[in-house]
Image 1 (cartoon, helix red, strand yellow):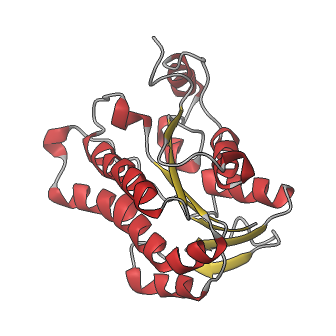
Image 2 (cartoon, rainbow, N blue to C red):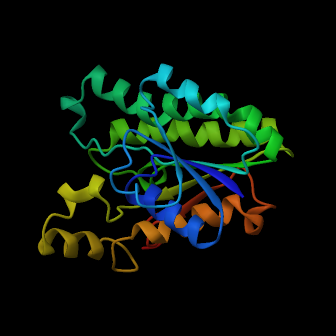
Amino acid sequence: MKVLVVGGSKGIGKASVELLLEEGHEVIVASRSNNEIGHLPIEHIEVDVTDHDSLAALEDLDELQGVIYCPGSINLKPFHRLKAEDFQADFDLNVQGAIQVIQRTMPALKEGKGSVVLFSTVAVQQGMSFHASVAASKGALEGLTRSLAAEWAPTIRVNAIAPSLTDTSLAAGLLGNDKKREASAERHPLKEVGSPEDIARMAVHLIGDGGKWISGQVFGIDGGMSRLR
């Protein structure tokens, strides 16, 4: 397979890149830098998903079997402290960025009969304090997932993954010491914090042959948080 991983230079994106390479796939990474993945046998395209002009470079791609869109945000504030700019920034990164990437790679996805994987959050289905902005934008992404899956069937499959807190640089402020890490693990029924690899395995499964009869779904990879008590 030839797979484009957007935001593949760190966290879940990087774990997805490494797993795809282990399985022998061709990987293209679109990100602002390749500092952490420059040693890997990949093609790198420098883009900023909030700068839509820079995404024009993705229009030159052909015959993609997968697009994994990984950029995300953790903007946790009480609702009364959230400004319009906060909601707009989260929406631009999580939703408009994904829309722009998908629109620009759509011809290549159709040519390759490809699959798209997006990322939501457990906070969409499980109400959580201080998550209003990120949950609002990720909720829109879940709607986009189902709408595109319906519109593009049977040619292109579209699914999403809704993780809980995952041990990435994005979550460093929430997992900064042993006490915070233990408290975060305790909130999950499976009593541990997720790893990037936990999430990447599902992403790679969904774009591969193992997911060929799956579309329009949102999968909670969340240590049981969204369903178990």
